[in-house]
Every structure is written in C-alpha cells, then in structure tokens.
Length: 303
Length: 153
Image (tube, rainbow over all chains, first blue to last red; front, side, top):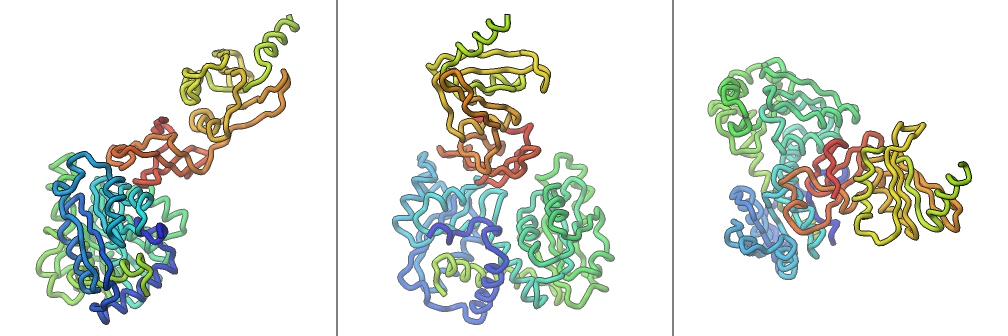
C-alpha cells in the first residue's frame, strides 16, 4: 500500500507519468464517475491552502467519495502538541486515503512511512507539490500534443519557486530545451543546472525578459516574483515590473505558444493578456481537478 | 627499545579493535561519534603521533570491543581514510578500511530548520549522493548537505 503514495514527482517514472496523463484525459472527458463510492478521503491541511484543498475535495465529491479533515492546524490536535506521527496513525485508521499539506518540508514523506493508507502530498513547505506538477505537465501535453522536444521558458522566481523545480525534473524525461529568465537574486539554483548538464539537457540563462526568447518558445511558464524573497528592497523595486508579460510581447510568438502560471498571479501577467488565446492559466487551473481525480484513483488502485 | 615498543603495543590489546590513521584534528570527534566516552571498555587514546601518510595522526585502542559495520562507517563522514585492525589473541586477524554507506540512519542532523526531522521525534535518514566529495541528501526534505556543513548526531 505504502508505495502507492505520491510525495514527490520523482516518485513517478516516465511511463507512470505517461499513463497518468492518459488517465487525466479520461477524467476530463467524464469528470463525474462514482468510482469512490464508499471511500473516505481525509484532507489534512496543517497549513491553509484554499485553492488546493477545494480542488482535491471537489475531485473526491465528483467521484462519489466522502471527505473528512481540517483546513487549518489550529482546529487539529497539533496545537495541543500531538506529533504528526500520532495524527497520521489516528487518521489512517479512519480514512482510505490521506491528502495533506504541511508547513514542514518532508512531512508528507514521513507521513507516508507511518501511514497504513496512501498519502498524497498537497505541498510540504517549500519542497514538493506533485499534483501541481502533474497538472502543469497535462496542460503542456494537452496544448502541444506531446511532451517531447519542447522549448520551455521559465520566468520570474526560479530560485525559490518549487513549481519550477518540480516541472524541470518532470520534463527532464522528454528532451526539452530550457530557457531560464530571472533576476540575479532569483536565478535557478546551481544544483538544477548541474542536473541539466549531467542529464544532457540544453539550457540557457537570461536576466532580461526579451521577446526573442518568447518567440522561440512553445511554453512560457510565468511565476510570481515575491517581495519577501528580496534582502534588498531597492533591488525588488528595480525588477518587479521587468518580468511582467504584456500582450504586445506575444505578437510574434509561435502559434502553438501557451502561457502558463501556477496562480495566484499579481502583476507578472498584465490583464490585457487574459483575452489572448495563448493565455492558458485559467484552463490550467481547471485541469487541476481532472489531474487530482486521476491521482486519487491511482493512489487507491482504481482503474 | 624495540622489544619494549612491541610489548606496549601488543600487551595493551589482547582482544579488541585498533582504529588507526585518524587525522589528529578529528580524533575526539571520532571518540564521541563512537560514544567511547560512555564505554566501560579499557581504552587507550594517542594523538599527534607522527604519520608518514597524513603528518599527524591519532590512534584509539579499545579492549574487548568489536564494532558493527554501521557504527564504524559513521566515521567515514569525517575521516574517510581511517583504518581498523581487529585484534584477537594479540594478533591482527582483520584489517578494514571504512567506507561510506549508501544510507545513513540517525547519523546526520538535517541542516534545514524547517525539515520535519528537526521538528518531530524521529530518526533522520540521509542518502549519500557523492561518496568522493561527501555530500548527503535528506530523505525527507530532499535538501543536499555538503561535507563542510554536515552535523553529526
């Protein structure tokens, strides 16, 4: 049972990723299937995340399952000093599956080791958020018709952005070319560059957000440059609007280009982009539902 | 003279373990790593002895004590070239070189304060990702810790 848990995107092999994409497609075609009849799913949100929790809970409800859980650790026993292990041991007696978000990195891995039922990681601190990565992959697959040989441009906070790191790892199976656009303070960590080099993946780095790079991209993956990441606020003021995508910057982009963003966005995508058919971030969020339906069924061994 | 020297070395240890070629500056770390300060065995510790191989070395002799492989391998994190002589009946019956294992359980403390292993009563687990330069990766938070930042429990 334990190996059915999903903690990190690297828990899935290339084949498993491809199988899961097919499964997500079937849920997109038919999102209401009562395959979880009689099952109870616990959503344990030690750290609040309304968007992710609602997406998982909607997925369970549309599949006919029941949900128990909490959306804030202040309503759980952890405020009384209960260990994570005890909470997980207790809940795994009640539920068939645990979906959890926690503020500590590694919490989901540890939970998956002490739990008698599978655990799906819905975010552990700044570490992993694999259902987000799967929905990003599905969005790329759906809009490009393939995951192979794509030009992927990532923009914004490439240092702390966990969605960027996980997507990079997942895409590494599919012979991509990466373009990393970030301010000096938030450039992609050395470890990921080393990983690309050792895996024979071509990558390029830029500190300026240039149309030339947009024009050769198949996917433009935007992220938020967060003020709190900067030690020098002067530096933030300088760069905060530099990495903003405006509609006119897409003028000469490829017809198949799609703009993705894990959301929430603030000012990194100008509102005039929203009506451009190349803007895909809202559909991307919608794909989260089908993705989570497929991940839940995979964890529970339901075909 | 030669006879006295021989006597000191051999008589000191009828049965037990000699840990040799410990870099002098690491000697007391090795002592604490093996929890020798709580051991009731007869222990002889020498430090700053001349060594052709590493300049100054430390040596530890422990009577009637034979370490498990995993205990010994902990040493390799701080002193990768340490050699072990297993003594029985005054004779060296086995020489061992320490090697870094693939997985370190409850040996290293995670450097990430936000890691679950620093916030929950549990064992730490680290995968050794680079045996040559010594780098380890936390099994839980997935943070890589380089040799100079490794803190041993």
